[in-house]
Length: 542
Image 1 (cartoon, one colour):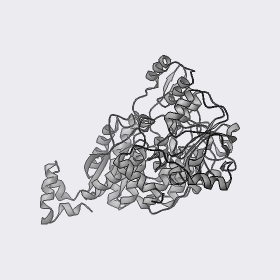
Image 2 (cartoon, helix red, strand yellow; image 1 turned 135 degrees about the horizontal axis):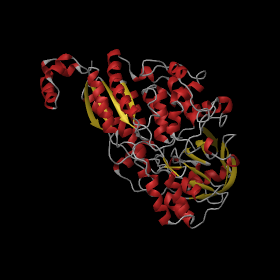
Image 3 (cartoon, one colour; image 1 turned 30 degrees about the vertical axis):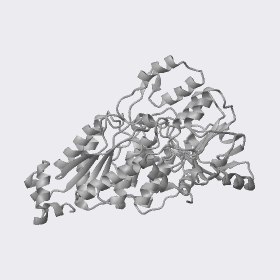
Image 4 (cartoon, helix red, strand yellow; image 1 turned 180 degrees about the horizontal axis):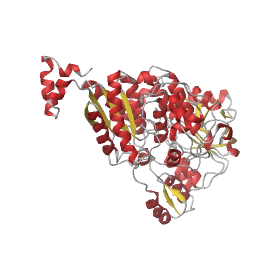
């Protein structure tokens, strides 16, 4: 074991004294028990994380009962919903920060394995990146979704507030009435109720084989979640004993399975950012084209908030992720899991308990999966959640309305300067341009809340899993790096064709080149962290 260096030899006598000063017993050191880290992303700012210390206590109890010594430390977590529109540029950089945090702690302290206790958007992918990078035995415990409030037969939850903002800006609702809605939108502990990024990444984690079966959909407040935490603690000790590592589990087949289930459920477009980043740490290459390839042949079997009316609690009652995989069993590739059984075996044992919540492929909501990748002279690639687009907007052509900040766009909504048929363009929102690639849920839901039916949005920023409608993000190359999106002007006609995967602006090649020569980059206020993030993703010539 890696920890043997601390347990044996005169050279590490002071190390043992320091460990005993922290509460480790001398007999435990002599017994050769494995050192197991527990990376706890608890804080009392995020509803998805307010209960994680209780779960962490159960993880540690499981580790002790299985014969390990647990060591807990804190991992930061950002709530995208709270940071959005106010200061969200640090959210995506925090993913790398989480991965670095775990590398620092596990390697510095010679740990034999570790458990990541997580729930929200960037923390879970950051932990998976660390698992692949370090390739030490690891198990991820996701904290579970919240339960929506049901008032007079209608579900309410925090994310609907973004749409209410649009209603207020459009004069369809008064501020006082909107403020009264806040109380019924507050739901308590757990990740937000729909298939947003947090829950999508929990699903990905389970299908990758890195969390216990049913972990992704078990509610935060369900007593079963505490049992899962305890069993997670026992599982990590078993993995250390057997020498099973994340790269044994997170194979290429596992990533392809995860993308397939993501497409079948209609998850967040942010998986296009996170899955390739995790795979890269595992020395595997996953491209955006693979998402489109898998999506084209994977039926969309679920209609979950924001694309539909069902919440994650409904998926859990219908059989959870094993039930979804059961529908896809013949398409799945076999891969191992931390459960000591293969993913195909879990799929075979899965049972669908509600045929509308998790439909059979022949009765799919859509016969293609959740994500489509569009290309053209406006983008080498761009991403859209096609299952959340109304049929009449699958093909659209309209004049551009260009804004360089979310606030400018929100002001335009309030002033009614956006018309039906417009294509709103938000450039310089990418990893280098913003920098930090903030999510665009505030403008996308505000447009919908304002009542627009035929307004599209194109950005080199990214979208929340909560985004619906004809919203194209992740445009590459981004404006800051010379992307054509940076030179689009008001009135330029933009063509969107989702079935044929095309995104184009009606400008000649010569005009594009001429405009690129004179493109101006907006000034941004940068912290040192944001400056370093911009440098990492900048493709500009100095």
